[in-house]
Length: 203
Image 1: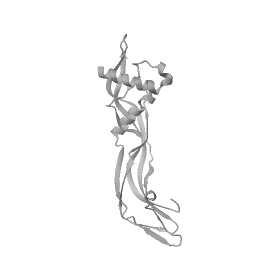
Image 2 (image 1 turned 90 degrees about the horizontal axis):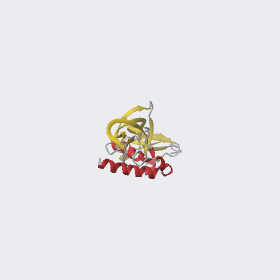
Image 3 (image 1 turned 180 degrees about the vertical axis):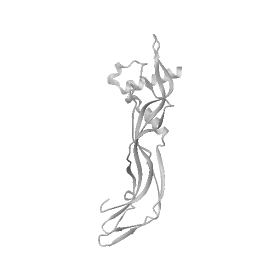
Image 4 (image 1 turned 180 degrees about the horizontal axis):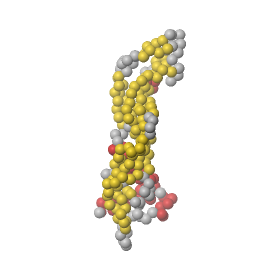
């Protein structure tokens, strides 16, 4: 109980700091119906978009690996002939919407941490650009690595839920840890990745 009160005191300090304009509206121990903790984690997605989109997370032109075929040539053949290792974010554009009266300004960082703690934050990919590609004169060839993303939404599980009040005294709000769903996270989640070549007049 002492540990919980110390935790609440810290949360209240964060709330008052983050909401200085409305601090007078907050009871010093009544910090909201739900308070995230170290055990809060993000559940898998329960809603997702029907379509995916391509995120070009690595471009050869940024590493001096693109090629231009002279307009005087009929065609050219490009072959990188090497493997490329790079990293990309598993979750992109993550946001949280907790509801239930939670002060989102004060608790966003904790819920963001719970989301990235549950889902691997970054992934590494090693791909071989061993196959060559032939393209017409006057065009560029640019090797790219693409993460296929889909918008998804999932819930959180586990938090301190307000269960009542004790009359009198300073610490008059009662919280119990419960494993139940609350709020949700949204993000563009990388489902898989592939490599390809961009053929264009300008890159």
